Image (cartoon, rainbow, N blue to C red):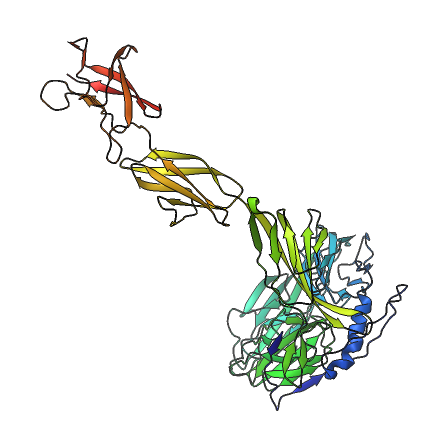
Length: 619
């Protein structure tokens, strides 16, 4: 696959980072670095970097041993710097610190790049169980990150109040400070909070006076007064007290001016992986900015590649980034008012081997990974097993795996096709090979997918509910398929739900279709008897109105729905049977009028289904 890259503009700044690389033997494995036919001669000198990565990845990836503090140690200083051994072949680390195993309440998943030490910015709480979790970060090497078991130590109790601290920005004595600036300061050992006083005269607190919490910065609610001296006093505190005798510091603001906003990476995008080793870095243009100060380092705290380098455009080429490494970049727009405030750090990770490669001659990116386009799920009908699948992607090789419940994989086929007969999780892997003098380099892409079986539905029942002048049909089915439902037309429209409401009374046909094409079943619905149609009273007084009690078929129902009707008095005595074709009962028994009272009926339809109820005879 080839992707066009933006042309390299002329007249821009260039930065080059070519460092010394110490290559250590991989140990008893005696691994040999493979020879590779590079796609471009311009990248031949990067062979050494690939060799380093190739050799290092032949060894097992073990979790690093923590050097400082000693695991299990007690009375560890709260100002400790956490240090661990480097692991060969690991491009980066993520650290979390908490008060429980795997916890993140102190530091939450802080990426440190390839650094093997970390200083908690706010120190550690005293007399507390501390758990440090280190994650081996591989970004996009075809294998998951490794979360190592948490190591434990206990910090020493804090026995004294904290010392004083000092301003980081603006520095003590700074002048022409932007009125919209925020204030930051250094961490004071053992502090768990800070009191801040701001004023326009020595000892004054007219701008702010109070606690700001356990943070190292403060954003005033309003701008500082212009062309004024600002006096700052910081008093760290903890549970034992507040630092005393802290020196008041001062800075002077400039005339009102508007700082530029922050910028962000365009290419590579924040968090992008497999970035070429000589990319064209591009970032967003910020209105009003006259330059951009760029810092790039191996960790969030360093600037080995660029350290505050000044650029007057929005792009630059950095030549020869190290392969398989994470880089941290900070872009700070600047104008005559000063630097943008609060700009966030971003990161990206380089790749090598299978690409993508940047060809400076053609201005193109080239990757050797095959493209894969396979669905997340496939299905087959039980009566048509096996399921024959074929990969349509063009590649040098194919592998089909079944993923067992344990997570292990079973190789099923090494051709473009496979026959499957079971439900479950599977993985298709396709790969291209690059010939080398010693073997081949394999560049693979894979897709995990699910196989589900389906079958034609069985209609178990259709529950019919009378809703006055309409019906509600609820279709109950069984089967392993995924089904949809239609009424009175096999062509649809079909719906996901199995309930049809506001259906006209009368006979209907319901259809159930398997979504995966395994077939359609149907069932005729003939509504049975219900209380509708049986009058609640009659008045046999000879006035021609309600003189007979008889079943009256509701609109849309057949008139011969009722097969027989029996009438009982309230003592359960059978009074007589009605023929649905007659006018009905006239309220007599053996030719004599019966008294006004409640009477009961039992009716049967043509399928011998019955309904019972009562009605009133009124005189």
